[in-house]
Structures are given as structure tokens and as C-alpha cells.
Length: 368
Image (cartoon, rainbow, N blue to C red):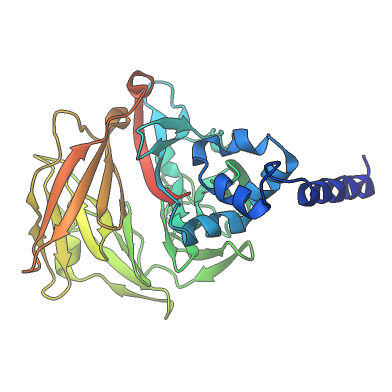
């Protein structure tokens, strides 16, 4: 088929979609309100009903309409791996019903990785998009998952190859920091930022020094990057803070980096960590006096939650995914005296047996 024929075919399909009623007998405005309430996991099925449904559901304005009407719902997306077979898989949890759904596989080049931790994942929650970086033979590849279409698409490759690094969403741009050039050898201080609107990467200010390993969190315009404590706890961790407005780095304060003793999550604009040791205590950081304090309330359920953990936060909620893809939800409350407390519950979910061999590498909350 020639390019001209393809173009004509697309134009004909768009014309049919515009003239064909969404639901016969209903004005399109009313019919679209009905479509807006269709649950996300079944969008792929609904798109096959007709060309007009497909055009409506995959239009970016569809998600904007859901958000303006406050009917977009949070879903938990988990990048998981099977420890026995090394298979990687993205899965999504409907937080209201407890049902799991398996996402389409990423491009084949992303399945050929030494470890899921060699990749880095970031998200733009309100746009319903996931970003996976560091795949392919060159370790520069990048892919984007769009929840509305339930599809992966290739993005422009990163400027520098890297594995075992961190990335985060800074003001709608995805920033990739540090890592290893060849999966365990030479480290890099390179930093770059991806603009999804223009599909381009741009160099940013380099890290002041290489780090042995990485954890990160984004608060407002700043990205916090640290090594975190590691066994045998002989050397204090290094850490730096990136200011995206000024494109500069500064050294992380002593209290912040020395108290960063777990996996991090940002809730209510505050930095929390959950330890993967002991009874999994949760701490919150105060920039006023550069100290950490323990969060009161219940501890993470030890009987059902086992390492490794992946953590995501949204509004006043914390989601912790453990081995077997068990999920705990914590409700964080701030008292009048500024002290924080948390109340945990396990999220009951379907088909648990199918996920017992999977562990989480990363998780994100998207609104769909």
C-alpha cells in the first residue's frame, strides 16, 4: 500500500468516526458522558466496538474530560519480575475493585536485560503515562506507555547510555541521573532531561560526583538523589539535590542523607522513608531542623509484606508493593501539632496465586 493510499484510508476512517453516532439514538454529548465512565482496563475492548468509539477514547481530550469531571481514577502500575525465570511484566491494580490486569509487553529489546533494576521508570500521573528508560542493546532506549491507548511507543533514545540509574518527573519533564555506562563498570555523572511534548532530550548539569547506588525523590522543582545506607554501614552515604529551575546541584544536608534509611516516597509534599528491616518503621523528614522523626500508628503488616518493596504515593495515601505483589495502603494523617501518623490496610486482590512468583522493581500511580 502506498503512502497516498494509507493517508486516504486514514482520512476515510476519521470521516466515518465524525459522522457515525457514538450510541445510536443518543446525542453525542450524552453518549460521550457514558463512555467517560467506562473502566480503564476495558478500554482496549471498547475501542474495537466502532471507529467512532476508538477515535473518542484515544483522543487526549478524553482524559482531560474525565479529570475535569473528577471521574478519573487512580490505578497502581507495578513493574515486576519473576525471580525464577527472570521474566519482566507490567501489571496494573484497580484500587477500587482489587482486580489485576496485565499490560502489553514492552518492545522485545527491553525484555533482554540483565536485571529489571538496570532500567529506570518514571511517570506523569495526571497524563496517564509511564516512561521506561535504559533498554535496548545500547542502553539508551526509551519507551512510553499511554494508559488511554494501552500501548507502548518508542521515544527518542537518551543522549548517554546508562543502567542502574534513577529518573523522575520534574515539572512534566523526565530527568535521568547518573548510573553505570556498562552495567557495573564505569560510572557516569551525566544528567539529561526529556521533554515529552517535543520528544527531545537535553543535557543538564552533571552530578558533582558519582554515587555507588541510587535512590531518589522529587519534591516540587527539586530532585533528591542519594546512595542511601548499605550493608555493612561502614561509610556514610553521599547525596545531592538538583534544582531544575537553576539547573544546579548542591550537596544534600547531613541530616537528610544520614537518616535516609529506606525506600522513599513523597506524600503531602513531605519526604518519607520506609525501612526494609526490623518492623518496617516509617519516618518523615523535617527541613526546618534537618531531622527525621518516626511516624506513629500501625506498622506495615509483617506477616504479609516481605521484601523487596516498591513504593508510590498519591495525595495522603502510600502504596507499598512487596514480594508476591501483595499491596498495603497507608493513610497518612498530619495532626494539629505537625506530627504524622499512618493507618495501614491490606488491599484484597484477585488471582493471587498467579502473582506469587513475582517481585516488584518499581510502582507508580496513574490517573485514568
